[in-house]
Amino acid sequence: MILEKGTSAPDFELHSTPDQKLKRSDFLGKNLILVFYPADWSPVCGDQVALYNEMLSIFHKYNADIVGISVDSFLVS
Image (cartoon, rainbow, N blue to C red; front, side, top):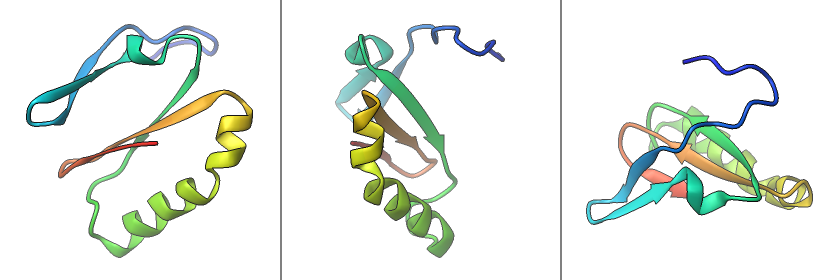
């Protein structure tokens, strides 16, 4: 699904741990940045996630949270 710029994302639900789920509606009133990357433990992906972590204050300045989605785990900041 491709959304036009400015369109709110539909609600979704993802496992954040085997027994916990995260929903789009958990972030109501905030901008949400979805980051997709292939693996937590690869050098390139680790560097990518570290860069997002360094920039958290900038994202938060714009009322944005980041959700990282990978094939092997889940990251929320």
